[in-house]
Length: 145
Length: 128
Image (cartoon, rainbow over all chains, first blue to last red; front, top):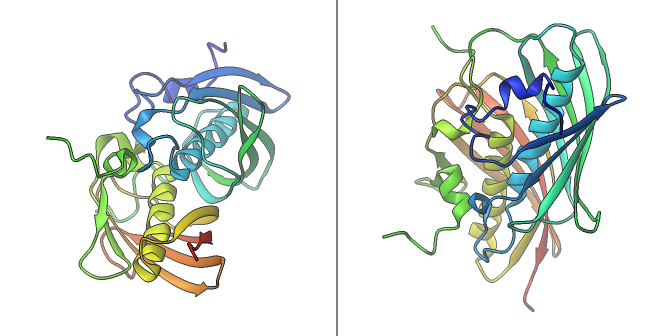
């Protein structure tokens, strides 16, 4: 497992969102980042077996953003500006999933990333995504005085 | 006592229908933070809110006897969010026998200053 990926500075056990998630950075080679997680109970739908598609969206945004962090020469804030997700199926609660993000390139402070989620058990496809990120954002939310 | 009828993801997202059809209210929770340095909401959280609202407005239109599968979502992140509540308005662009196309706009301070806009495609399964 990776111990020094830049995104782990952000997504540590202290991070408010991922603190309770079993997020593991597995590898980062040739601009491809691999992260695994066990689908948490928090996202159970009414039937309690499936996770809501929002969980996949959350993970894809997290892993693609992490991929951008990993490719930057200096650490700076980033912001998602576009995220397109196709949901092939819902992840099952307790299912171990593999999230793979490919950094496709950066030009004029815009980074382009593609990603997918597959089941670790049978490699079946769960979701795919394209993400676009702005590198270097304002240091506080817009609208603040 | 825990309400067994409320799905856990709805509790995690902390979202509920608003006072009119298509309007939804999100209550900020600390675990919705994506960037702790500027305390903005996680883009995946607003994405998940958008998907929830898109499904719910279809149920509001067609009733709970149909089931839905959200197949795709395309989000534009228009502004950086703050660590505060979100409002969302979902509008159905078209419903056919098998598909629904729904636009969802989210805002925080003012509906005229949206933070995200999403376009969701939903497969509908009818019982008949």
